[in-house]
Length: 316
Image 1 (cartoon, rainbow, N blue to C red):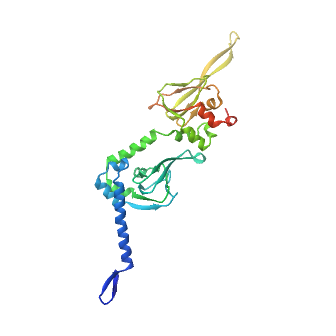
Image 2: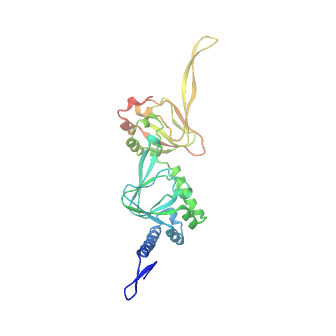
Image 3: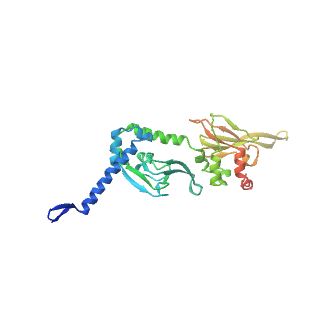
C-alpha cells in the first residue's frame, strides 16, 4: 500500500518516507543550519551597522538571509552596479578593490580583505551603487539579506540611515590620493603607467590650505607640484606689454596681471615645472570657498624618478 507521502511495506506494515519526503526534510535541516550559521556570524557585529542592531533584529535578519557559495575569482559585486542586498561573509576570504579613473584610464586598487563577519553592499540600503568591486579569493560563503527584508525587520530606524550616510560622507570627504591621481588631469599624469600612478600615490603629502593662501609665485624655483583634492585655486600670470606713448612717442612697457585658469577638484598644476626643473609659470592663490581647499604636494624626486626618460613627451 502506498500513499503520497510514503508507503507501507512488509507484514508488519512498516512505513518508510518517500524520496520527496526525505528531500524535503534534508532541505529543512539545511535551512535551519544555515540560519544558525548566519545568526552566529551576524552576532559578531563586526560593522558599525550591526553594532547598533538589537539581538532580536539580528535574529530576524538571520531568518531572512540566504547563503550563496562562490568559487575563487568569482565577482560577487561590481563597482558602479546597483545592488539589492546587504552581504556578510560567512566563510572564506574576499578581496575588495576600488576602481579609480574612467574608461581606458581605469586603475584597480586592492583596498582590503574581507573575512568572516565582515559586511559589504550597505550602499544598496540607500539605493546607491556599489563603491567597490568584491571577488572571492577562494571558495567562500556569503549571506545575502535583501534590502526589502532588511527594511521590514529594521523599520524606520533613524540610527541605521545615520550610520550609513556618515560612512559614505566620510569616504567622500577623505578621498585617497590615488582616487585623485587616477583622473590624470595633467600632462605628467597622462604619460604615467598605472603602476607609476600607484607608486606616486604613496609618496604624496596631503595639505590643508587656508583660503587666500599663496601656493606658489611666478618665477620661483619649484620643488613640488600640486593636485587639488577639494576646493579650488586661481592662477595668474604677469605679462610685460610694449607700447608707445601717444604724446612723447616714447617706447614704454607696462606689466599686467592676467587670470589664466581656475583649478578645481582633480586638477594638477606646476607638473612641468617639477618634472623638467623649470621655474614656476604662474602665481597660484587658494580661493575663498565654503570649505578649506585640500591638496596633495608631490615632491620633486618622486616625480623625476617615475618620469625618467619621459621628459621629451611632456609638451610644455
